[in-house]
Image (cartoon, rainbow, N blue to C red; front, side, top):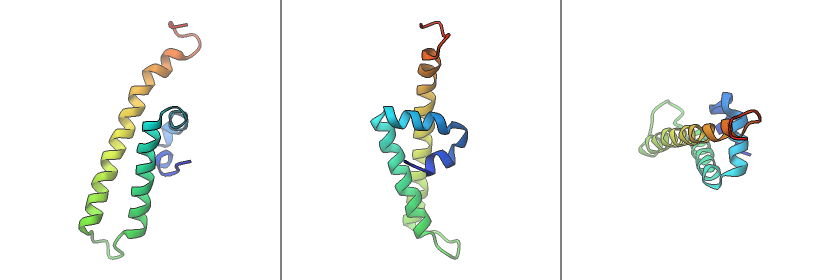
Length: 89
């Protein structure tokens, strides 16, 4: 299970877990996000400076965060429609 994604979006943790089970593409995005976060944790410059690789990975992390948010937003209307008591029963 990915831990960085629900830590970044704690208010969406339940939706993240559910979508991870259902959507291979979303799972791959989350795996990429985990790898980037791990890389950044182990390769951060101790003096607070940044290298070209760090800048690249920070940009990638932001891009992946945007993709995760977009996937969750796309999924939300479907989840709302499938809840008991919705008009789509």
